[in-house]
Image (cartoon, rainbow, N blue to C red; front, side, top):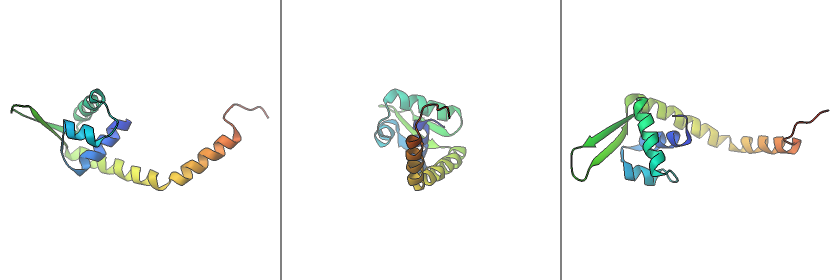
Length: 106
């Protein structure tokens, strides 16, 4: 859940359920392998429900479990908070960089 992709997948599934290929397009930049691993981890942790339909071609839908919905809401709130404080983050980074990043002996 705390990985970059886990957070993005949870946020996407907060909107609605997705098929694998739809989710891959929605979460830009994630590889097929990484998305599969992320979904498997989130399913194992109890956050995501995998619904495999016995049809041809195979259809698998991913959605949030009740616990997944709760955690996705928390992650989304944290994401919004961070976005609202980006100016402070950039200011802190600039101040840190101005001080220098190496170890100094005074």
